[in-house]
Length: 198
Image 1 (cartoon, rainbow, N blue to C red):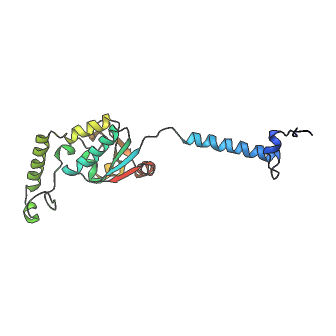
Image 2 (cartoon, rainbow, N blue to C red):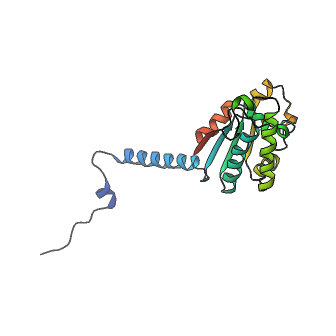
Image 3 (cartoon, rainbow, N blue to C red):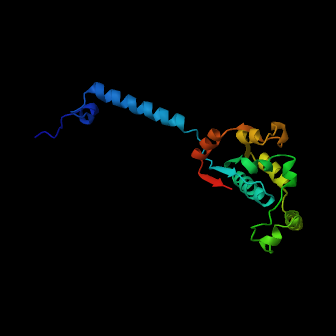
């Protein structure tokens, strides 16, 4: 009695009777092509991405986007802050030095709105906040802009707003990206893990 088994090739056992050899080879080539395309799409950059849209240019609202951006960059994130409308004044070298904190409607200003609306109240509220910042050793807006730029944050100035406000591109801090349109900002938002509107 013989215990020999008939030998079969790997191709014969793996072959599906519904595919002929040419179809199977074409399928393998297509899989290799798709794997190559996927490898090309994966740029190997696993960094988190964050986009912040800064729309407000008051003294107190200049801090949140800059603090969040510089902190995220310290964690190695790819960060863009798109400044548009009044938020553009944060990046404007001259205007950023004169941002005001609004006393009207501000829950942290302990006076009624009728009093807060009096002339000089915004200046007083701003000076009170600046005093707190100085006493606490908190970075200034200019220092946060420098820190953000040094950390690789892309601080962008909206081109449409530059034209609307009749600003010149030279009016902004060195290192600020000017001439950015909404389409570019939207593209980065679409690719971001986190999107914030401030």
